[in-house]
Image (cartoon, rainbow, N blue to C red; front, side, top):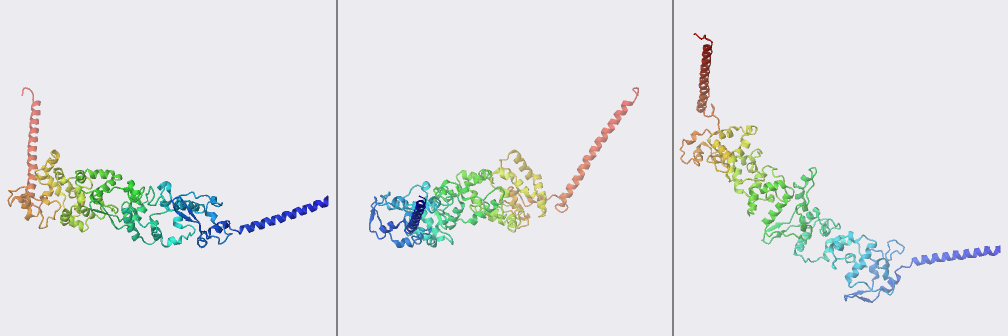
Length: 560
């Protein structure tokens, strides 16, 4: 029994070892046989076709050379981890023969079904080219491409082929556009694409920054597209709106880098101003007015989103009143400040008169020839500009009686400033002497009692001019002695040649200016106090004497 048991163990071990070697050998041999050998045996050189419900046909023939030359390393190295077999792409339900009927109606559905298998190895479809492959966002569309439409089926090529001519690759399908606006835009954009730019410059893989995104809000994409556009939008009236906008315009404006540098602020995005929902899609689903002027006014209304108080002040001024009355030529925010390239309105200071001169060209020409405008042109930043006299946003109507009454106070802002006038050797007596004489006194009374009634006395602008103020020494100056009679006759038509001699300009009498008047005034300045003082002494002395006499009378005895 002992001997037979040992031999039994030996025989069983030998049998087990042979079995293991046989199984291992069979397994190794099996690994060398491609799992899709039956597929190749039937489909390579096959002549059959599959009839689809749509009437389209699908050939069962497979060209093995196409598979071998694709990027999938088909059968090149059966032991490699990257080797691709028929069974890796086609559904396991298709392995069994006879194959099940195809669960599709047409070739497009078949391409979509096959493309689903690409996600086994590659990224999810929702992360790649979202403009084509996100039905839950864009809805189902049988015309949208699948993986196989762009990359091919058995003949998958390297992506370097796409990168070599990305525009041409996209145009292989997108040869025409049903929407005329899209066609016009792409014609310009494609013609102006620069180095490193292609269709994916706008149609990115990022659903947030792609122009196909349902909630697109990327300022960069807006700028990218409009930088490439050189044309104009033609409105129904025939007016045009330029479409070209550069990133530099925006970044260099007060809404770009200058705002970014302020604590607590950020540079504005395109959609901060163009906030209508329609601007977040292309073609833009926004109704643009038929007239460019109306469009400009509407764009100016967007400023009130941030500049609430300034906008209200502007609408309360003459420009706002004219707009509300239907005058579309009245200035808006955009007219004065610009649109994308907004700069500080007073840097340089000459910019102020240039801005107003866009509409008030004739007045600006006169102003530039005046003493104020000429000095401003020469770089003197102290002289008044349009906004110093008229205001900035809440501009009053300068034709009203109230504005005329207040005009001396406007001039006094500078001409009553001693430190400012000292720089020009101009006396500040100008304003004080005006207020002290008949004209100024009358205007002051009107301002206090009847501010909306036109005064019957001259204000500064009646004698000096409005925008055409010239130096007093200029031969054309209205206050030059030779021209003074003509100036006075505007209000005093019966004035004679000697009439202006009664006016001492704005000088206070002195030994230098009008010495006779000064001496007479000095005489009376001395005489009147002496006379009044003498009378006062006489009266006080008389009162004192009377009190002394009365006091003495009280002290006398009764019998006296």
